Each structure stands twice: as structure tokens, then as C-alpha cells.
Length: 378
View: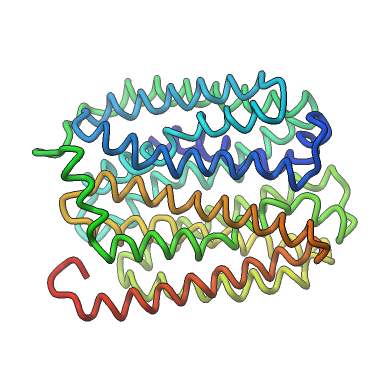
């Protein structure tokens, strides 16, 4: 399952390091090329709930294999997209299996975990995504720079095929939950704490993408960083993600809600700092590493959804990744808006800090509402 998340993580993030190449090849501006990121995110947002509901009765191994094969085919198709419009459409299609794959894999991992270690089990599945930013994304970005951006998607498609083979060979057959049905899964949407948790992710994590979506042109323009050093910055972001993914779930297993609050406050601080550090190669690079630690919010929110979703676990788990990609689309879009409006590349940091602050406000409302609700759904 971790190899599958590695493939998806590489496919999702590599385009952020290749925006100038995509823009030049397809004859659009860099902010316009950023819309390809938003198209992928929209595919996750739509695909996660749709496929989670429709596949609620599928055996888990069969479902994970099917999702990974579909993701691989979508990436192979993206590699041969002849124009900007079709590339956006194909990235949307490739993204449809993303959220359901991560949601189902997280549930399978949590079901195998010892008591009090759910967060760490989910974090291990997510580790593939974070290692992708450290290893997969720099390799794919290097391929994209040397052989053209299309080769990066071929690489991702090959990883997806490998993951499907490994899942077929290594994962035992696990049936769907007893009584699973589309109608029961849709019950998750009636729970206020599910909706609050999704909103925290969709808004509070947007700042990560506001900064990272444009990190390459920002560092090259403001910090005069040579093109050859950009993969190092991307790798540092991956180091931050790995650190956040290893440390965050451990805190979440001990104190879930304080960990969530702390991560949002941390986001306000480090995203705001990027506005100033982006002018300095070393300070900016370290700040990018720290921004990567915010990915710890993913498994934290995943565990929170398991606690509040009742018997609608599959949809709630998949929707976590819809929220993550709403954040992706929102952050990339708002970052492009402020740059296009003339506020400069560093303004993406202010956008990020404000989004993290808004997420903190939603968290405060959620925590207050939870104290008034009886039972485990809090």
C-alpha cells in the first residue's frame, strides 16, 4: 500500500516542479499552467466520494488494485496530451482514484494496528506519499527537465503498475465491512464533526499548496537560485514531509485535538515567515522544509474522521483526501491570483498564513461544538 501512495504522491506533486516546462511547451503562462494542479485536485475532490460510495461493497484488495491500475492509465494518457485543455482533462481523470485509494488503505492499516497506534499505522501508509516528495518527485522532476515533462508522467504510470502487482501479491484478501452500502456511507455527511474536520483540512492546508505550487519560480526569481539547485529544494520539502509524517501521528495517538490545533498554529508561523525568507537561498530552503512538516495534518485528520464517522468509515476516509485536494486547488489558485495581481511571488506566503489562520478558526468552532455533543461522535 505504501508503494501505491508513493506512486500517487509522485504524480500529484511532480507537476509543481515542472510548471515552467509545461507552460513553455503548451504556450501558456506559469500561473495558467498552475491550473493543471487545480484540475488534478478537482478530480480527487469528485472522485473520492463518488468511488467510495459506489465501491463500498468491494473486497479491499480488489478495490485497491483496480484504483491503482486506473491511476496508472491516467498518467500514461497525460504523457501524450497534445494540448493544454486536454492535459487538464486527463489530469482530472487520473486523479479520480486518488482519494478512495488513500481512504481505503488508511482503513485497512488502522484495522491491523495495535490499540493506541492507529495514527502511526495510518502514518506508515502515508509515508509512501511523503517519501515520494523526497525521492520520487526529484527523480521525476529530473527526468522532466532532461527528457521533457511528459516523461515524468510515464515514470508515475510505471510506479502505479508496480504497486498494483505488489498489492496483489502481498496484501491478504479483506472483505468490505458487514452491511456496507452506498446509503450507509452517505450517512457520514449528516455528522457535523465530519464536516468540520473536512473544512479544517480544505482550508487550513491550503497554505502549504499556495507556497509549494510556486516554489520553483519563487526561489529562482527572488533568491536567484540556479535551476540545477531546485531539485534540492524539492527534496528538502520531502524531508519536511517525512519528518512531519513520522512525528505528527505519534503526538496524535497521545492527544489528537491538541496536535491538530498545534499544527495549524505552526502553519500560520512558518507560512508567514516564507514571505521574508524567500529572498534568501538558504533561509528560503529551510523554510520550505518546515512547510513540508504541515503534511502531518493528513493522518491527524484521518484519525479524527475515524472517530466521528460512525459506520460510514469508507466515505469519510476518502473525503479526507477530497479536502486535502480542495486545499491543493484553493492554495494553487489563490497563489496564482496574488502573483498575477502584481503582489509578487513572496505574497504566496501571506496567502498561506491567512489560510492556516482560517483553518484554526474552523478548528475552534469545531472544538466548541464537540463539547456540546454527547457520545463518541465528539
